[in-house]
Image 1: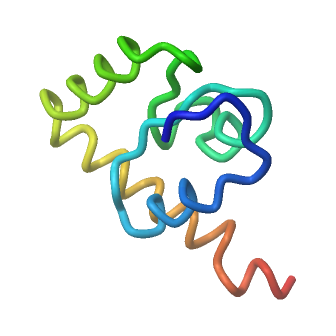
Image 2: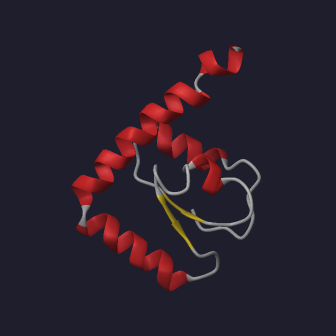
Length: 88
C-alpha cells in the first residue's frame, strides 16, 4: 500500500482482516501504528519504489514467514478492530 500520507488506511486493515500479507509506506500517521511498528506487516520508505519492490520480493522469497505474519495480523485485527471492540 504505497502512500505519502494516511490517516486511517481502511484498505490496510481490510487486507489484514483477510489474512493477506501487507506492505505499507511508513508515512506520517496510520500504517506504523496499525502494523505495530512492522510486527504485522512490512513498512517501507514512502516514495521509494525500489524499497517497495524489494519488500514485495522478500515477501515472495519468504512466503511461509509472510503467511505467518499475515495470520497474526488477521488475529490482531479481529481482536482490536472487530465489531466487538467497536461496541466497547
